[in-house]
Image (cartoon, rainbow, N blue to C red; front, top):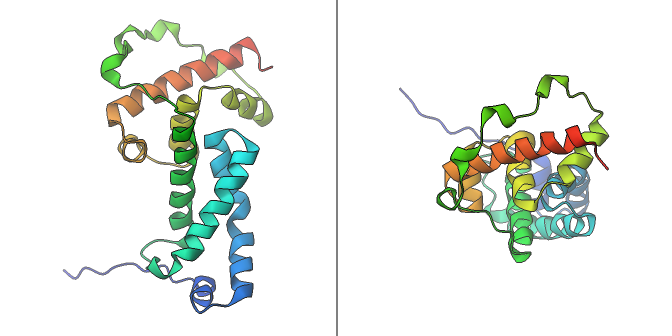
Amino acid sequence: MELTAVLFYDELVAKCKQGDVQSYEMLYRRYAKTMFNTSLRIVNNTPDAEDVLQESFAAAFHYLDKFDYSSTFGAWLKRIVINKSINVLRKRKVALMDIDDTKADEIQDGEMPDEENIQLKVEEIRKAVSLLPNGYRTVLSLFLFEGYDYEEIGDILQISGSTVRTQYHRAKQKLLNIIKQGVK
């Protein structure tokens, strides 16, 4: 059986690597909105998300020669954006509690709001997510919106997978409670 590596060649990235200035601008336009939204979901602050976006592109363009096409450029850039967003939260001293410091066993199924009866518009849900504490919002965003699993999120945040799982379930419970109480 032969193993082959999948390469995600991108002509625009190749032109950037050759120093084509217009290609840098086109690459920025292609990914800027998506990466801004990714950061905004994590940092929950437009100026910080704008800073993360600029810093991420600056870093990506600076280290473009290290991009080896083993993933898409978008996936590579998203990882940079997420890491820089997490760094912003760390600078704010966001504390993600370790599971040993929590009372996770006190969460009871009967306390969960009825998810099926909750129907809200996308804007109301976005507002509700923005009201979550930073740690909960970060875990929820990485899991639901960015598609990372518990272990990957744990690696990114430097916490255990079980802590991520607990944070996610608590974030979901808190989000549902915010929605039930009415988004303000």
